[in-house]
Image (cartoon, rainbow, N blue to C red; front, side, top):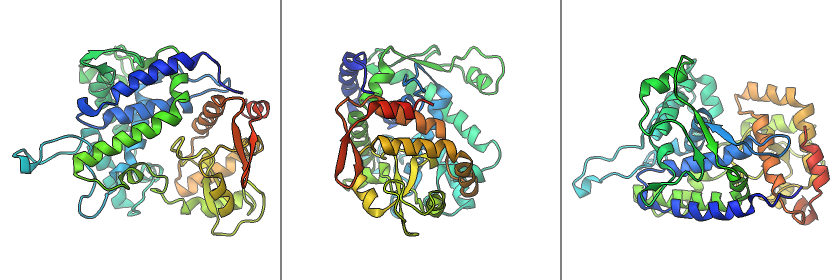
Length: 383
């Protein structure tokens, strides 16, 4: 089940270049952080049944992922500051003009504000916003964000020291593509625009292997940059931007409990109505509030599992639930307007477990950890 030796040297080389790239000196907005996390997430989500990650990602897929990442950032930080800025600008006290919001964030915020007016819930999930939005409103947002990514961060992400080194991906659009060319492609008419980002050999596997190291590093740098942009030094800013408790899971708690027959997903004992909802793949490894990644659990089981990966028996049970109760999960998603993307969630599970070494220890219960059973896990995730 463990990783192949192929991505090892690629991962080391990639890590060295990304450390250089994460230097905040050349950043004017937080876009590069968002694109890097989006690339990591998509490499995991698009991992197939064979365990092979993707070699191509589209600008449309990237735009949707960037919207997901910035969505919780568009909630007000507090009553005084409102939504935090994510670009560098001159402050009025320095003789400059009033700061403006980063353009990608501004477009997402405008969409979100319209839907919050329709649904005043402070922790409005993106899935619910899409459900109450006007027809085609979300797709229009995706098109705008896709254009902004093509126009700015994608051609500049791989610039280090003033020179472009396409070590992450190759692309075939010009650095200043005509808007009409992109619009024609988005409308499905004849266009020369190529929306593919071809990942360099070994990069997708290396990004997955480095996820546990890169994600907290990127999050930390992202939070520090936002703090600097907004004059903040509060230690909980990083948790505000990337914490798992931003969206309330209360709407799906009773339905998940009923789906499991009123029993804990992990230990099988009866759980109260006030049971916990656990992220099967921990939030710290991949931010996924989709229904397939949520299970009802005892407070004790949830607390002891924490950020650990579950053992083979739990993986088997999780896969059986996703397959055998797909209709029931879909019904919950429809009734609660809750996100459900089973293929993406399965891709992440495959990607993360595939990279584990053969002596990895996985959580089974309480303080009980067992050595990974790669054969059982590979079999469970094969279909």
